[in-house]
Length: 504
Image (spheres, rainbow, N blue to C red):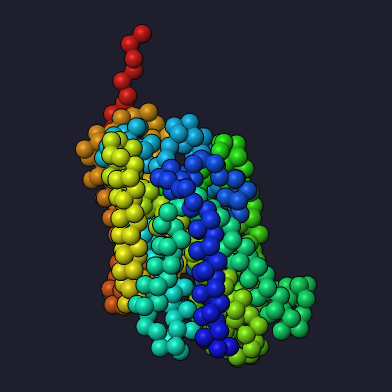
């Protein structure tokens, strides 16, 4: 299909988003931007958050990984559901009871200012890197398959896409994103199902026949009981649970949308509905991955991993049948994770770092500062995307999970310590513990998985002589985030003391 025609569909999609943004941002104020005036419809939030939870990385990498780990990823998805139960019935009641705008305000009320700032810092760091990694993956696909052919440089593509995202989130914030996420999730899911049906039709089979082919090729292996493997069932289950608790329940971007819902009960319905939908959608992505590999095998196509889906969808074999669908679905999957990230980062920086809640400044002054912060994060996103282009890592989804495990650990440690104990921290030492925990976790993971870091850094580390006898082949998987949280929790215990009991 002509790159110009594909690009015109992308531009048309952007114009639609801008129209929605214009409509929803009328009469918007700071409260609309930060928490949608606490008047969001829970059903819209639940459906829109599907796109935020999955992103363009899921759209490309989950199907691409089926060729190497079969359906092992579904073990992680089961863990996600357990995590959503914790978010809905432990964390959300706490946030609503305290009437929070930024969830990290809890840390200040429980421990002190340093804990508050540390929590916000690790969220800002993790969400910035994670969101830009997702953004890079999709921009790179658009670049390779469309814009390189038009002679458009990578930096121009990244700049224009970020500018367009900035335009439709600049005023409305969360209130706008609730609606644009709903539109984008619809586009992603319609594209997913449409691509799956077209590929099954190309293979000349129905759903039952497709499943038989998948089974014959052993793509449908879900459970992995190898204790040393990073894809072991218990590692994936526990890891998935704590990934959801931290990357949803302790993440300002995700909670910003949840606490914009009118009541706690509705917000809980939103979270549990989201968990149910995600199980079905992830199962469809895995099914799509198996079908893509079946098609690649039948045609002798050599593409694998993140390159598989775009290579097939945009090939001449389909004459544009799924090319347009794929592009629209891909950017639909991308934007909910990027627009929400920029908005939540702006909110966290304004509230947690600039102390908007304490500021006596006029609302117009706060608005100008908010817009400046919003623009600044867009510039940071552009720089980070260019950094990822230089690194050119082909396993983005593994990198995101790994980085989240290292940077969200302090949040898990801080919140769990606050909820599970009544001890008082020495607030001046909180930063020391919150920085030491991730560093120790990183060292352990480096010793356990030296080959991963060799591939990421493109340099030999020569650590096999240490790793093999020390860990006997054991590989840390998604349980990395729990390990990090436990180290941080223990460190916080060392700098704490029992709370003083009131005299009777």
